[in-house]
Each structure stands twice: as C-alpha cells, then as structure tokens.
Length: 431
Image (tube, rainbow, N blue to C red):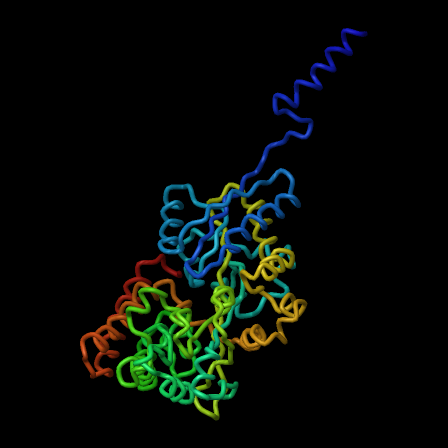
C-alpha cells in the first residue's frame, strides 16, 4: 500500500513537470492576419492582442495566432498565401463585395442565420459584405467622412468657423480666403486636389456626379457625363486655378493627410484619422461635409473594413466564433474605448455618448443617413481599371498642362470601360 502511494505521488509530481495535465486536449489555432497603416497609433497594435487574449479566455482550447503586416501589398500577400494553400483563417480588408465571385471567401450567411451578431450593424457597413444576396464579410468598424478645420488658422484670419449647411462653393471660397502661400498656409489638403476627391472623400457624392453604376461594372454614361467632368474640373482646379492645395513636397512628408502639418485650413478626414489628429496637438474642429448646392442635401460617404474567412480554412467553426466576437459588442466596445476604431453599429456609439460628442456626432449623423456605397468599393476591378484612368487625367492636367478635360475624361472612360469588360468576361459565367 505504501509503495502504491509513493508511485502515485511520483506520478502527480512528474506529470506537470512533463507538461501533461488532466485538462490536456487538442488546441485549435486560428490564424488572424491584420494590417497596420501609417496613420495608426501604437494603441492599434496592442488592441489586436487584447482582443485575441479576451477571445481565448472565453473559448478555452482555442488560440489566436496574430500576424500584423504593413497595409501596402497586404491584399497580394493574402492571395499569394491562399494560392499556396496557406491562407489565414480570418483577416480584414476592404474588398468590393463582388470579389466573392473568385471563390476564396467563405459564405458567412449560414453562420449569421444562426447568430444575432449583425442585428445592430450600420446599414452602410452591413451592405459592404453582401454579394448576390449572400454575406461574405462582417464589418470591423464603420467610418464616415467629414471636414476638419484648423481653428488657429481661422482665428488668425479673423474668420468664423465653418458650419453645417455650407456648400462646396463655400468650401472653395473659404480655402481661397485662407491660403497664404508666402507664409506656408494652404486652404486645402492633399486629397481634394486630385482623383481622390472623387473617391475617398465626401465630395465624391457632393459634386453632383457619380463615377460608376451601382454594381461598379459600368463607367460609360457616368464618368464621361458633363456632371462628372465638371466635378473633376472642380477638384483639379483647387490645384491649378485656385492654387489652394498643398504642394507635392508636403505630401511626400505627410501623405494624403497634409492637414497633419498644422499649416492646412481644411481637409477631408474620416474616423480613421481622428486618433492621430487627437495625438497631434493641432487645435482642430470638425464639420459636416458641404452640400452640392444650398438646395441639396448632403450625401454621406461611409466606409468600413470587413472581416473575412478563407473558404479553405480547416477551422471554420472556430474562425466564425472569432469573427462573431470581433464584430460583437464586447470587442467593439474595447476598440472604441481604446480610441482605435469606431463601432460597426449605433448602439455602442450611443452607449458612449458619441452621438452627441462635438467630433464624433458629426460622423454619427453621416453613418445613420448613409445610403450609397462609395464608387471605389463597388467593383473588384476598380483599382485595376478606373483608378489608373482617373490618375492619368490628373497627371495630364497638373503636370502636362492639358486643358481639354472633356476629351481626357471621355478617353479615360473608354479605357476604364474596356478594362472592366475584359476583367469581368474572364470570370466564370454567372459571376
């Protein structure tokens, strides 16, 4: 009996030393890939790990392996890994919904039908993941676009701050009045003076034009209309005729967000830029986007990153649990309180009082009224076909000095449409 007791005691002591426990069980590892952008703060990196650890604590036997990559080239990295059969289980990106036709995204519809996680998403965020009535992406966040203004520049000029209800012409005249090139002060930042003005800014919907059809497959009859040509002319004119936009040298230092220099009066921003702005020390305020005319309503611009699951994942149930957690209230609140991402649904905004906050309420009002998906998010081939064509127009206008904008836009439209047609014809029938 004594020998038996000693043997059992030895086993009790040795088993933990060997790394064996009574609770040993197979561990499921979920590979979660994420990105870091230049505008991200240090809290962004930490947030990923906080979320992963919180998820693991609530899901014993599941571990999350996080890989953070630079945002540049991230989509190519993901697709290359998938082609090699080594794709991540979960990642986030900003694909157009019709990327689902390529087959590498898992259809999340059956998972959602068994869950209530999407009950409170902003409609602008939810529709980003829907293709042909099926859901392939779940929103990481929800952001809107608005205008930031430098209070110190306005104060020095003795000008009143902009207010909701202004027009694009009010914006332009304000930028002209505040530009003082001799003293290094510019009316507008880098986004407004080029093709980005018609894509990732509120002006894209508030200059009276569209670039593509609703499904993103057609630019003929959109990008070549008098309205679109006039809109592009308005944007380019900020650089050449009005001369209120920041120079290229400032863009090389600060990127598109030259407002961060402290020497720019007005610039389009989104919720993604606010954390960095708050850290910058710039004395700024925000205001709703200007409308096209005094008689027209502001058309909101809204965007979001989306979580995706690889259709080749070996751990789909566990991967869905992670997506469900990341898009649910606990993780959304965690991101909001860390000041990293704005929540994907109105409930957390309201819980935190952001719907009445001087800065965040401006975005909130845009999000709850958003009805249109930005042009660049409508087609998986936009950045292959439409973006380069518009960039060519900007180059020819600003650097080449060409001034027949109608001819250039007509040519760009034909080039973009031919590219879109070729790209879609190469997809499987019915895509």
